[in-house]
Structures are given as C-alpha cells and as structure tokens.
Length: 229
Image 1 (cartoon, one colour):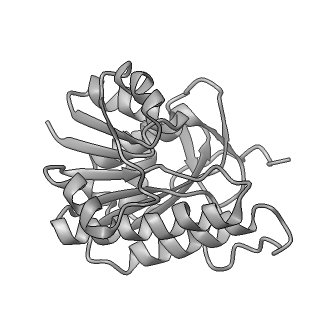
Image 2 (tube, helix red, strand yellow):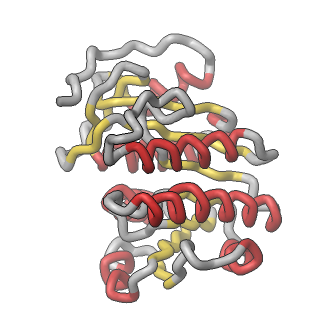
C-alpha cells in the first residue's frame, strides 16, 4: 500500500482517481481549497485535507507532503482569470514541485493536456492562452527536476463512462475523465513511465497495453481520434 497525495482533490478527474486508488488498496489524501468539498472527497474513501496551494510557500507545502510516496497534481484555477491561472497552474505547481524535491518525494504525476508546451500555438488574445502558458512553464520545470516524473497529456475531457481503452497519440481528440483517472492510477503502478510525457485520447487499446508499448518505446496501436470541435 502506498500513500498518495492528490492536489486538487475535488476535481472530477481527481475524485475518479481517488476512488480507483482506494479500491486498489492505497491510502489516498485529497487536498482541497474549500472546506465544503471535504465530504465529496471522503465519499470516495479517501481522506481530505484543506490546503490552499495558491497561497502556501514551499516549506509549508513540504510539510504537507511529508509521509507520502507519490503526488498527483490535478489542480487548476479553472480559467477565466489569467492572473489566478498563472498563480495556480504555474506558480503553485512549481512551488509544489520544489516542495517534493525538498522532502525527497520522488514520484510526481502531472495532469496536463494534449498539446501543452512552449509551442502550444494558442493566440495571446485567446482566453485559453494564460492556461497554455502556465501549463507549458510548469511542465518544463518538472522535466528539469531530479524526480521520477510522468506528465499526462489527455485530450479534450468528457464525462462519458470509462472504456478502459485509449490511444497514445499526439493527434487531437477527446477522452473521458474516468479514463484519465485510470491512466493516472496505472501510471502510479508503473514506475517505468518515469520520464515520459503521454498524450492520449479515448481509443481501442487497453490502457495497460498502451502503457507497455509506450514504456517499451514501441508505437502502440492507435485509433483515429474524434476531432475536437
């Protein structure tokens, strides 16, 4: 059994992930900003702790992470406010990465998005620009650290039921939040995915098989993804 911290524990992906990890026998703690969200996290079987990562400094975050074996960053400002987007999706994420380094917590799974990176191509006038810039900065910072990191880059998120099947592909498409949670859970059980960035969509390849192909450097079978409208 591992102790796993989920930052952004009230997000839809995070709640699915908590439930999956608890069912697999792990000790899970979801960190939330709003005390009103504690009940929702606890209903998954996980523990909940209130922590506003937007305002905490590195040593405070390091204290929070003591005793955990792995961390999943699934927090986000939710868009709409560029200043807050940079404060959470970039600055708080980077401080949390630094806190993991400080505590010796090596396993770090970052939930990003398909297409994230310095060459994201989003117009500065687009409302998505701040998020794209923030995620690019946080992901690149994580890649430079001496951590066992994996970056998940799912396509456009849907609330469709999980199929347990994906395509690892850079071609744009959609993926259910439940499938993202299953991928995150399987990645946590696969330390060989450390150092990989995994773009994926819903597809027709079992998650475990797709991850094995990615780990082995093979080209996994893929399904043509549904275009994002």
